[in-house]
Length: 588
Image (cartoon, rainbow, N blue to C red; front, top):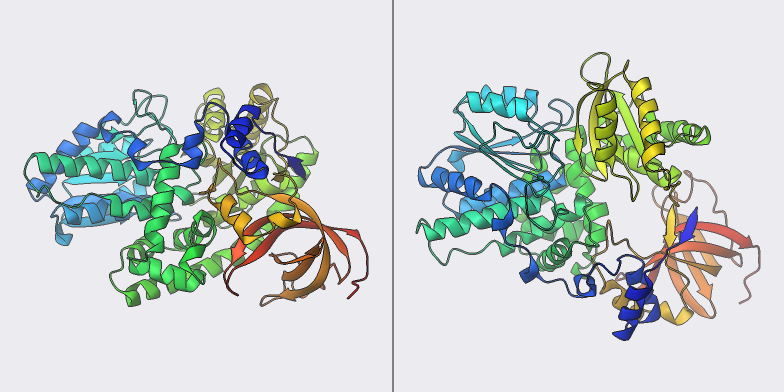
């Protein structure tokens, strides 16, 4: 269930030598090794970001875009349907407008998850080639690195394709039919940070284009730089779960982007703050990852993602509000679907785990394809194993699915090895270290699943089931203070590769009551050595189930910490897991 997080002793010693509180130093030392400079965490700098010129093919891409802008060509922008793709779409289009491209010359292509599938898919290309007038240049973002066949069709129709992406590239190399492929994960790419998200690749490309246009005297030298678009990049980076630990680029981008979002200079951020929280101070990476990004992603899971793009680039508060409410409605529908699928999937996955399954592979015959990834993530949390969730595909006898992995296990590499052993078993797949999408026939699934187990056993035998919670230790009562939490939060942004701190402690319950529409959450007042704190435990109960604790009971909690701004500023615990340690009576 839980395990104390191991720490790097040399990082801990260096952090302490710089005057960091022992627990703060432990938090850092539990997330990076001595190979990562401590400054990467403590003070990430935008000026340390590697120049775009180090990206393979970026000069080709920039020259072709500059030509298209100069000759007033029609440009298509094609991006993935998730938050990384949508923010990439915003970065590219807002940059092109800044460079003088008219809205009439731009066409938008965002795939429909269920109808088109991922990336530059056959169905999406069919729609594009049926449109008039055709774009003369197409730039992709957050997809395209594995789509040679469809890029070849576009090229044959007279459309140059520039791929910008961050997903793993096929062993055969980048798509040969593309005019340019800008992807830090190309084998021949010397860009030092391989962990950047698709939206950051888009930002680097457009920054390079800006400089090229200035050098050509095609735009004014005082044309604003693209730093004000880092709010989009921050959201896409957090949403795509790329590393916030060893990547100074990602940490610097998210930190800068959060600062921009808090200024509320776009209608979309004004609406997000008014709808999701009480104060701009509450805007952090967690809120982007777990509140805003799911709403952007929800439309892509059950409908068409263009609405998410319209929300991001809305020019008025009314437009942004209307778009947000649509996304929020979709998210409520998504949560209902997700809950039903998780209830079906959990016992199936647990049974596989009990029978020695190393990679859990669950088929939900009535499942919704748009929620596969979320359900797979929940299985990883519950069972600590890489998990694949599959549902019926658009074609008979085919299944589509999403895979989520655990730390230390490369999902894309695992699928590569299995597909090499059983050529053709996967009709399509792609992704990166932590997450992949795949399509497979029902007939091929049993042998493919067995092959995955064999490969995992041979390759990752040293990695057992992952604990659900990695604990950063216990806190003293005096550390449950606004001042101490502010010190801890200064280490942010927290996210994948630099997880939010989680602590354990024993508290006495002062008061407890179920809250929420179906009374599934718990609101608690807790006591520890004379200090009283508020706490909330989301989804602690089944609907209308009584609270498992009463006033006076002692409970052991796994929890995270934040500052609640509802009543000014006060400490708030978010309980992740709780167990009754001893029944008791509260003495007043």
